[in-house]
Length: 281
Picture 1 (cartoon, rainbow, N blue to C red):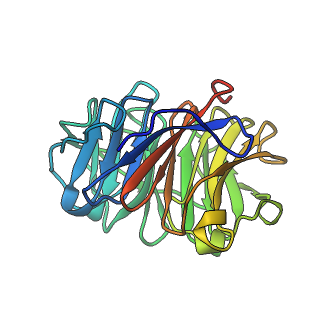
Picture 2: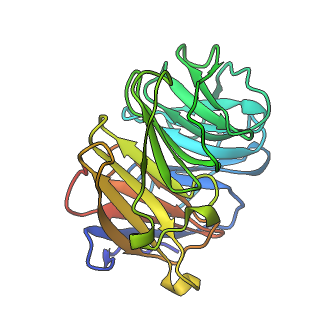
């Protein structure tokens, strides 16, 4: 089932443009635009769509379970998961495994470009590659109390993360130093302690300008929503837009590289929201 009509969302600039019911299991999903999207799931199962969710053929299965996805501005697609294996594709159908000697599981993944990227493993370590996945090293991360629920590699040396305590961290020198600031959680009904990895997604164009999408659980799912936080001063302050959506603590979010599209992934439903005000800078 596909619902393609625009549906307003709490008076914000975000509108639902796709609602796709799927009959296969998956852990994560994300649209890059209104045509191309991918999923990742159990035993390396991946699906892709090029028709806005009308059909989801299965892509090549070359890996174990997939827990995270990403995309580059040029359109290359990335997935990561069990045994730390990262795959990259240009169409969602055929995938190439990167040389990734990562122990355990990659729970989050984000690449700045084809050479530079990072993952977060099950032990909350940030792992960095600067040679397209041929080698990885552990990044000197900040001291945090909770798990990392989102990561963004926004420049050659810039990385930011969000933890389950509602804190935002940024480094502009690949971990030599970090700045920390709290997200406006309480005033926006966000309880990050109830969320899991991929329950938030963010994109930054530089150290000052970025967008963070995060699930806000308010009682039952009928009252829950997605909050999109926008900053233009390096996370010192934020403006917020709220999207009505049936979400829960396991719903996963994915912002497209240009922050124009936001995917909400449920058990059997994938929803795509578009910022109708234009590209979010």
